Image (tube, rainbow, N blue to C red; front, side):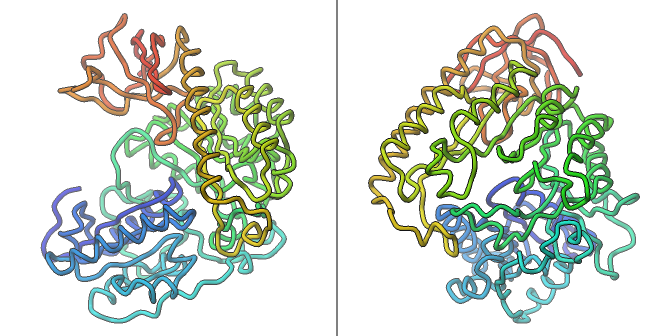
Length: 498
């Protein structure tokens, strides 16, 4: 970001957590820029530091608190006059967080986002704002999904209308300025950007607190999603990563449960967009028609981010989820029938209350058969306000750690083997990083279609029929996989797609 004029207020945004939070931060950045704030990268040069926190699991909460304390430490040595907590941790704990962390000058909730510029001005001026009072956001929306779009509840990342005092002329990089009004400003350069499909979740998984602070499921209108996709393409984005708490539910509150199947081809047709990637698929809701559209639509990458969580039917029922080894393998087989080289990833929770050795064996049996490209392994821990926190049969924390290590070791072996199986495949690779002075011998790094940003492996490019010299971030090339290193691939460039 360019240096900010001294006579304009400056703000630094620090984002923790998932891609959904990244979208929320870019919406906050757009709103602030539209109201005369300049964004700076260095928190020590800002008048206000806004920390967009994560409240999902204990480590994420700790990281968020650490980020707030780090920002607060700057107040005695540099320019920052205020440190403000927003995001999931702030929404979930609100005034409790404010009491426990007086170093933060304010704790704001999602309802404050639409008028964030005014809130920051008042805080920087020394005004004390009452901390956000947490509430179950599921109760703010009608039970009937079709009634939710008109409810008027704050939905971060949906680009809802600005307050009436918005600046009439948006600064460069904020947009789109016409059509469905979305105020967003990119905070990171690069050819990939998350695009929010929906917020909230209607599922009641026993281990998950997200619906209580993110609310019930609400889809964005297709016109808003498409408008933002076009704007992102104008900003140099070539890959859209569709994010939500549950992408398979998209459209159910708009009267069309198969709306994603019709939206995906439209997004793929946006000029400048090479790849559209869908994330956060719920296995129990993944329809055959959706599988086919993801696997066979040009421009939509054949990639299946399926939230299995476990494979034992007994554990899944206690989690208030559905499925099991056989149905999950059938789902993967269906995807690979349409696209044999399709990518597949998932997360699993180990050590859930009541999990037996037989349950763990069943999870391992599934993982061996599933041939997943990437797997996140998490140990169970109680989350405030969840049903599972009240369950009997809790495992000793040391036992949970041992099981996590056991499954993680297996996953490392299996995903490395899956990457090795791809040697000889021809892949498309989106170039992300070019190092003019590489230390490890690889100058160009990108991702193949089966690799999502941040959470999966990468593809390291070497000379083939085409030299890697001259490649730049955003280029799309074809390459042949010639080796693997763990989950990462090494591929020789065959040609340029763009």
